[in-house]
Image 1: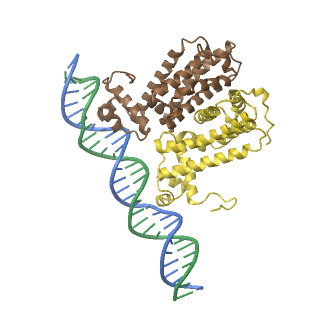
Image 2: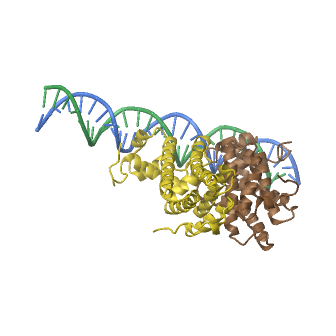
Image 3: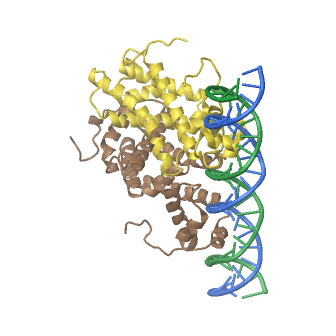
Amino acid sequence: MATPSGVEASNTRDRILDAAVEVIAERGYSAAGVQEIIDRAGTSKGSFYFHFPSKETMTMALLEQMSNRLIKRVQEAVQGEPTPLHRVAAGIEFLLATFSRHRKVAQVLLVNLMGHGRTIDRRFLPIREKLSELIKGELDAAVAQGQIECQDTSLVAAVWVGALHEVIMRWLLTGQPSPLSGVAPELRSTLLRSVGVDPAMFQPLQRRA
Amino acid sequence: MATPSGVEASNTRDRILDAAVEVIAERGYSAAGVQEIIDRAGTSKGSFYFHFPSKETMTMALLEQMSNRLIKRVQEAVQGEPTPLHRVAAGIEFLLATFSRHRKVAQVLLVNLMGHGRTIDRRFLPIREKLSELIKGELDAAVAQGQIECQDTSLVAAVWVGALHEVIMRWLLTGQPSPLSGVAPELRSTLLRSVGVDPAMFQPLQRRA
DNA sequence: GGTTGTAGACCAACCAGTCGGTTTGTAAAG
DNA sequence: CTTTACAAACCGACTGGTTGGTCTACAACC
């Protein structure tokens, strides 16, 4: 099925988290009422506050779960690639593909959970940091292997994450480009150029234009 | 109505907008109560709703004002530069400098007004679009003048805006780098590389005080 | 009978927006 | 110069609706 977990009637806690993604994606964090979340999850207030001490805590748990899953999947998707640059390039494509399949996750993770006070914002940062650390790791490896020249990989990683974020956010708000993954080649070229790699020299596997 | 030269923004409407920036920067949009805004502005509910039909409308006006001012200042700061690439490079530096001087504006404009429902999000997009159109315009000119090769300038502009956004957002949340404008040289190099320009070949004119 | 999990009525706090009333500027009328 | 008239600007108590969180009851299982 298109739905991530196949099983619908899992335990209550997970149903609450699933419903929360939907409601937060649609209404934003503040306007996402506990009432609507439990209605969609098919459970009750008592149940909600049995599993989570507060709405905020629930949101933290949601954030944690989503980001951990995402990072894990990116790592899995990328580990077959031969070189660091191949891995980052594959990572970009994977992220675009994943977010375009999980619109609501993207909406929540990239847009709707920011700007609601320090408490949440602070927890929000680590995700992007994990992602950019992943990128930085590969870039450092690329430097070590002589694939690219020495540079501030930390900054470059931030730039890449920001670029991805921007492209995905525009897609969320305007629907363009359609499909999202259509920008992948150009985006990959631009980002590779930004670390001094000629995109024409770097042709991943089969493609050659 | 023309504002007399050198007069402080002391009429009620402006005081409300100024106070709104502060409160929204501190608490986020939803948690920013009309009560606190009018308290800080030294006015009253009646006054607030005399000047604005609703909190949301006030926020739109605020957004509009801030983004128009920003764009205008960027254009002014940049128009003395000799070539398109000099202008975009100067623009990057100017934006970093400006936001580091106006932390609260950055917080509101880049972080705290997103994810509060379609109505605001939709209005939020044009700002980034104006910025990236500005960049796209210069990049197109650079292509026309043969400064850079032909490429998807629209995407590149988005990438640049995203990169700036990410760098500034991290500074807002973590305080690093300190000072923010310290990244300007490296960031400029990275972004110039992303359009195929060797940063070493591009020596910007020395800046005046 | 204690633990875990669910149910839903209830509550106190909060908050955007309203409304009747007051002040202030100003311009015509006396 | 004063009075009258009127509207723009401002004030703040109040309201109606919403919401996060609590509490008691209950059911299933050890």
